[in-house]
Image (cartoon, rainbow over all chains, first blue to last red):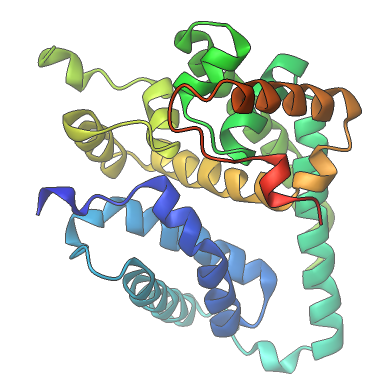
Length: 174
Length: 96
């Protein structure tokens, strides 16, 4: 029972499928992304309930439940969920645009990081190196890898949050 | 050591995201995250950023200085096969 813990790597492996699944449920990239976020949070929080068998199907179950909760909540709040009423072509253009902007924000946020932070984040997040390996290659203590990573991700997050606020202000017309 | 387990730092959360933690330490971080909205929300966002960056690999490596440094570092890793040096990185995944 103790080694059922889900690792970040496990979750990442399931992410593409989860994102497609979320899109299938929501038919909207924006909502799909929120759904995936909620779902990941729930998976992390509820992982003691995972039976260690099939992570993907368990995540799908969680995802479906989260989605149903969202619909129920939206109904209670009186938020319109009839996305069908919106012209589909306009919707998908907006969604694609949104997705593109998100990626653009990540690229730009990353670009603004100090060079050393970019290197560490690339080695760990993109190349999948362990901290020890990254430290060895960079000839720095592991503690330095840890602190650079933590700083890099915090900066990237702050930059994304700032852009999000801007984006929301622009999108307030919706 | 036992009482240190309860001191969860920002860096522990990153280590958790990156699959660096095992055993009690991992359980401690999970328990920590499970009870805290903001750190949990951030942890999930960091996970997604990892995924984003992996999808954006080509764009990220358009930074010539960064790309050449990563290539140089990974080459050094391949050149020193002391441990189980699995082929990884730019060479393996190619650049679509």
